[in-house]
Image (cartoon, rainbow, N blue to C red; front, side):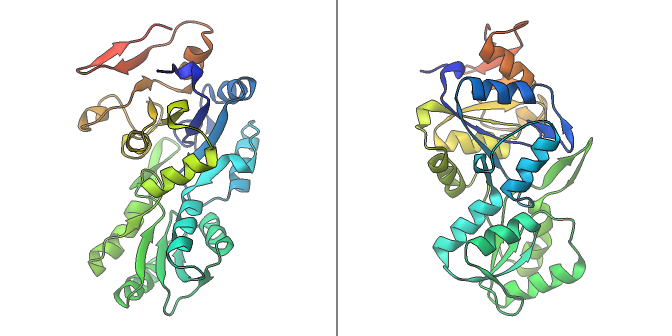
Length: 281
């Protein structure tokens, strides 16, 4: 069994791991430096669908981190790839951001607000009653309902904002149709990410802050999981889940210290059958 330090590839969440909003979290720069120094493969696997890979690159650049667009895989891209396999050259009605519109356009889809094949919902601030009403009636007329990810809330600053799962809920409620969600932990999304990363399962870890997407997605993919308590999941909410991560760190800075063996040994925990057991650095 390979240790964390020996893993060759990393799937990594972004919000709650690298940053909160426009604030870089401790250890983010050191993490990227370690990745580059050790020549690890890295793919930022995000359930965000409102930005394109280039826009995500620019966001990280503004925060002082340089990453290539090829190192991002968004739920918008996963959604577009899935729908392309299901209905090539189809049409969509979209409630979502520029990243989702761009991904669907690149996949060959046209926008249609009369009789689309799909109604696709992603996180967006451009959300109003008229658009929801339109989406409801299109679904009732036969369009399939798709969500870019199942997240019900996303962190923003010190609080939260409604996620795709919350934005799509009124449409599900009125139509009686259950949406199909892409993004993490959807098996299609995870398998496409692993294919893009081009790494073996035993050589890969996933790092994230959410039990219901990052950790279960990694578990069901067969890769080791690292939970950071710097985002959505806390030590108290962790108890609500019937499954657990392989490792837990307070934040990315502790993960980096553990992997580089630099500075004071951080508190890191690994699960045994019954409880957490501390690991020495």
